[in-house]
Amino acid sequence: MNKLIILDRDGVINQDSDDYVKSLEEWIPLEGSCEAIADLSKAGYTIAVATNQSGLARGFFTLDDLEAMHGRMNALVEEAGGEIATIKYCPHGPDDGCNCRKPLPGLIDQIETELGISAEGAWFIGDSLRDLQAGLTKGCKPVLVMTGKGEKTLLKMLTTEVEAEIKQASVYTDLAHFARKIINT
Image (tube, rainbow, N blue to C red; front, side, top):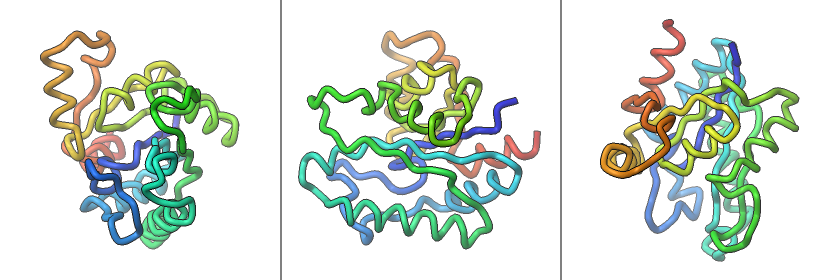
């Protein structure tokens, strides 16, 4: 069994915003998310984060702002006794033609290279179709959480044409719910 778990950030670990999460003050962890990451880490899972951060390209925040947010996220997970192995982000805008903006698999490729493990069979947890599509491209098991844009995404999955594998995604209330289920099975 693959012990890698890849997480989207906004809407999975922290509150999302249609106006972008632009600063450390706006980066607010979802209840239980950092503890869930720590619990998964302590249970032997390798945790990676793959996040689109087009706010960088749009000039909404700086790399220093992003690093401060990620520093806080890492600190909270470490305080709970866990570890995030790596955080990969796409700094590009939607029209930049990169290969790392989800739903493309470039961030997962970067995670595989850095950690030296395959993502095939890993869990990929997100709140958007783009997250699930990126994971499926690399053979990951898609998980939708109902936080962030999760409810809108579930409605899209049920009412529009999407890949059959996405319709088969596991659905959990939030990251803490997923962690409890996985650790206790």
